[in-house]
Image (cartoon, rainbow, N blue to C red; front, side, top):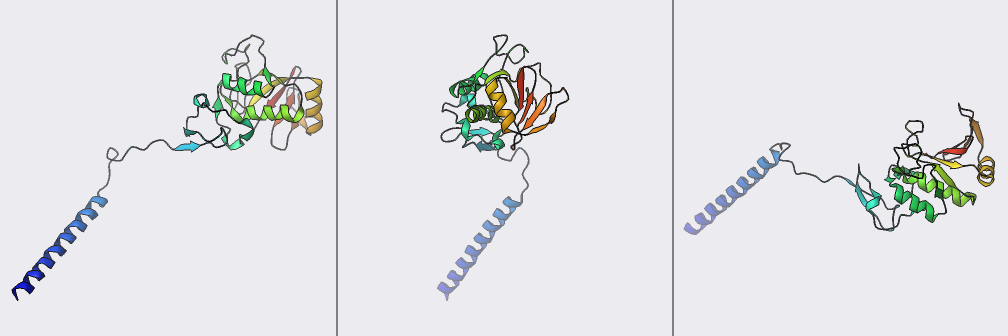
Length: 213
């Protein structure tokens, strides 16, 4: 009898300990957290598999490809990553590798001066699109206008990285006007040609004003 009673008391004590542990855990989980008690979270990262051989990760609001050591494959750039912007040096290097040149009347690349031709903060998709134009047309492409000041403002403007100017030449003129349908006339009298993907070519007097969307 003594042994049986001792076992019964031990069982009751063990049950009490279990109940206490469960109660404490429930209380802790139900306690509201303040802003200071919440663990700090790192910025959400986006992996851009298209941009380089492998992948890079950048914070959602910041994408500086200047800090990437691996070569960028512009041919793999996709419109949904168009917000990624690059430096003038990178853009010029990539264009040079594709046989596309940029020329400045002021022999400068300062985007704050209208006499310069700058590609600073140009969209990756814009650069890849002009490279594709060079490849598809097999024509000489010379860029004379980029993100520098002096162009009309707007959401899809030069400064926003959506537009480039390229000089006229017989080859590129023939390619654009025979490859894409005429889509009207701009307010300044420039003839417009539009591609199925939404790129718009405006034939100004000295150059093509191209909107890559």
